[in-house]
Image (cartoon, rainbow, N blue to C red; front, side, top):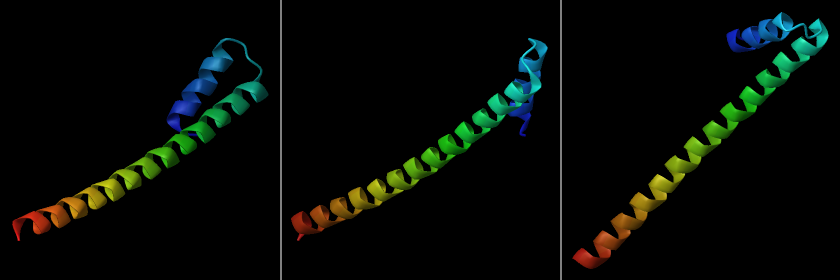
Length: 67
């Protein structure tokens, strides 16, 4: 478990949540964090792709109008 999930586990245990449920909740948060990381990576790739396409289109338009 990562530090944040360990803190979640300890917080659940502090309010008398059973150990197995607290552990499952911390693991679920860990899976959610992995999903969010994957989405952030995909978004970053899409931003780079859009930037490349936009730069290419601007270069084509500049070349068309300056000749």
